[in-house]
Image (cartoon, rainbow, N blue to C red):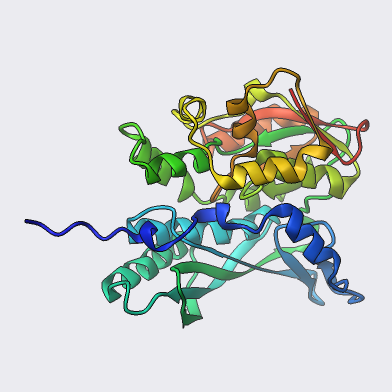
Length: 349
């Protein structure tokens, strides 16, 4: 009798960006911390929940620094490494930068996980870094009760190319570059209920690099960017609204979805993080009357290595969307707009 395959997810209580702290708790924790300033060269700190920290050098170059790590959402260790690395690197692209190096962050339950599995995780991460054109230049590892992997990533950009989540302007169009539903698929994977072909679709979207962010940053019509990860389109759209003092309006029917996301959401495949997101952000969100539970789960669904949410001048939106699609994001779509009304709120209808 053949041995049962090793299940990496069996060692973790959660997975992917759904492992993030409850956003309501996180806000309370951050509110109690001292401000990052005053440092004249710190262009971006923790004041607007942006994707990375940014430090200005003398010659107009900016250094971008970020870190991201989580527990496995798939059992294939190589895929886990690839997904985690793509997710971490995305923060640099979301700021308009290009990554230059990464450091590995590794926590593994020694004695519970075979060394070759750990090696495959590291190899997956290194493969994604190689695709991004950067080395894994070092890192740190510990013995941990659950498997954890991710990266600290350093990138650079010119100061004029820096794109924050706080600079969306009333009248801007909103583009989402990847489909939603990663958390829903992850829930189905854990229960062995993902339809045929779904896993390949899942891995395909979560390992796709968001390098288009660095390209778009050179376009003055692109005003703001953020990547959509553990807080879902609802939470990260709300961060755009808060940061810029604007309103965000999203059309539910325009949101791109993974092929089986709607049917799986109807069937009740939802993560605990989705419910936490709705509880944390619901007071600042205006959701259309009559939305079914499964539709609410779609907009609160935590994304792992999700797409970029881009705010750009309306007159340039069609050309920018075509550029994003041609760069390897065929599902990218115009999903809404920025308003002067409802500052600091998001509306989804």
